[in-house]
Image (cartoon, rainbow, N blue to C red):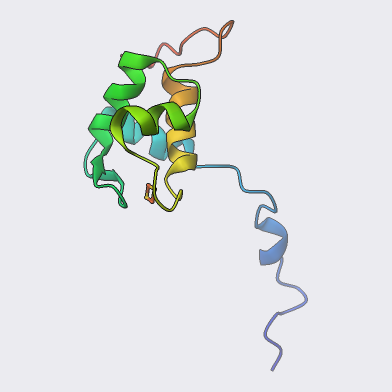
Length: 100
Ligand code: FES
């Protein structure tokens, strides 16, 4: 029995490029910042979000220097980058009205 059925289009539906964290998950985390965002350093999501709001960083390294998140394995970097983009958009881009 073949592992893949030639009529199964499952593989074609899998994105080939990593798109970053799910935007809805990012929005949910902003609404309800529960739990640890950086497991290596034990930094809660609420601390990372407040750091981004207060200090307006443009890069993960700035967040790392401020609150310690992201200085370990790096697996939280994509989420921190998504939060920076969402909460602190580049100059010229209007902040989202969802940001409250
Ligand atoms: S989970 Fe943040 S550096 Fe490892």
